[in-house]
Length: 383
Ligand SMILES: C[S@@+](CC[C@H](N)C(=O)[O-])C[C@H]1O[C@@H](n2cnc3c(N)ncnc32)[C@H](O)[C@@H]1O
Image (tube, rainbow, N blue to C red):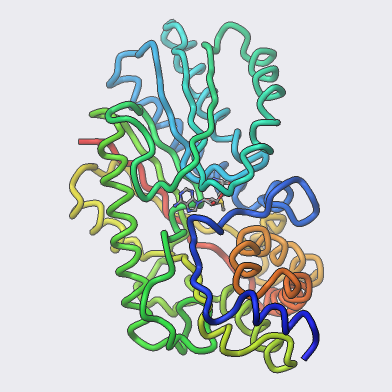
């Protein structure tokens, strides 16, 4: 056994309980492996949802009769350029509407929310340039804009009662508050997989039902009557949780971990006890929870797919030619979102090796068949 395996067993591994709220964060900073540099997929998703955002801002303004103050929260903002894209798009929509109707722009408060270990500093450093760009581009058409951070879990209260007009979240609510309980029999998998026992599927669905209901209940307290919320997240198009919509990329990552266990670099028992706090729901599961919780009415529910390699926009082929580059792109993206959880469980030392293997395996798969994310966008009004 080499020293890094030995250390990872002592400090990490099977006795270790993952505390999602403390550990989960997208890779910080602006380096090669950072979320800042590896979030092109999420940027594509935000741009595809822009028409829904514009429609929602319009709907809000027609109801509210141009309020002087407008308060917004972006849940799971993360760090890097994407964080302020949504803020910009919303301001752009408001400015356009004010121009059309001759109203004065409102004063805006924007809360950027994420878990406490998010790299808020990287976000805050972007603010001076963002404010300068707004002034240059929009001049007097944009009202005063105040952007602040709000650390904490969106599975619980974050804001004062009835204080928000609009809540937005992109690519965040598929993260659960914790790993579902009682799934240590999920051997050889790190998420729901084809070989997972039945109780694993049930436990994941139950955790999602409980988390998503809590999110709705918490926002219902905070959003003003008639206020709006748009949530975009990864889902699946069919009920079967072992469908390829669901688990493929995590199955490929699990295979890389199993290879490393076969080579004695990590312990197989550690793989058995590692499960992702993540769930991509079937659309009907989402609708049922919203209806049952009862505080919101769904205005719009749409779905769309994106290539997991966001740099691949050739829709004419079902496979990629450059498996090396595409494998690297996807591996970087997966690393930026999951590295904090994997390092917490297996130790930092395995991460470079794991994602080199992952790039190769994913590249091989992409040369036969592309991998796509199935996305759900849901726009809701507070009843
Ligand atoms: C993939 S990033 C999406 C970031 C950004 N919205 C975008 O579209 O690029 C998901 C973010 O959700 C955050 N997140 C996950 N669970 C959360 C929770 N319970 N409360 C607040 N943020 C959470 C993660 O920390 C992460 O920064």
